[in-house]
Amino acid sequence: MGLRIRNLDYGTHPSVLHHAGGDLICRSGLELKRRCFDLIGDPRQSFSFSKSGKLSALQVYRRPAAQTPLRRIPQLAIVTFTSFRSPGSAELSLHHLGVEIDVVRPRAAKWDHMLKISLMKEYLEALETDYVLFLDSHDTFVTSDILGIVDAFKKLDCKLLFQADALDWPACATEFYDRIAAKDAAYRYLCSGIFMGETAFLRRVVARAVETAPIGDYGDQAIYKQVFPEFHPEARLDYHCELFQPLTDYRDPRRPDRFAAANLNLEIQYRPDREPPPDVASISPRDPVAAGRHLLDRLLASALARLPETWRPS
Image (cartoon, rainbow, N blue to C red; front, side, top):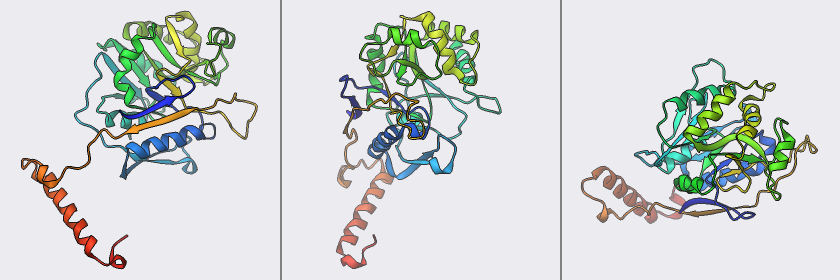
């Protein structure tokens, strides 16, 4: 099973989770992310990220080990666009499951979220897989359910699925999104931090996005929010978190009236996939390095156990 997260409101197991927005409006999401990486990460290794760029907002997590060799999920290409040189939680969580992701870094000197659209257009031109999944690099991560995401997507009867969110940002086509939303949907507005679709269909959407004028400095999300109504209902939002789960609770004490509160009713389910280290006798002699390291650890542990308790290193 590995790591799974169950949405108790909808009974779903989303594959990708996203803590969008600033740190003050995703406290619950950051705490859940930390707990997940405490389970899958190596306590001796770490990675860090500050969404605001400030030292005071620095988050440090256990770094999970990669399962090599990395492989594509059949029929699917996964991609992220980032200006950061170090891998984010998306790449690290995918690599932990042995899944390959294409990391595209723009040639532009300064990062701008509008670059995501031109980068996606260029990326899709040479793509040969049937499906493509985009996710942000540093504020998303995946669960074990990512391994079955293609089959799960096929059951949704759509050609493109965007993450749904509780925040209407930027305010654009609000009446349209409210009208088409599921009646019980806490998440009803488009978020472009995660989306998945048929490659041919996404090419059409991105071509239309390239032609669309931006709104202020709201980046690619404002473009996709304008374009989406033209492609609905073949393009849909993930109202019930079947594939994508927002982790932002929108309780900002500085702006209590700005955001609609969204409760996160989630449950972490975890079972280690890896077996415990084998006994020395069971290690193949063809791997003497592993056998030697394991034997040395056992000898040291045995020697330390014989020392008086006051002499043992902490």
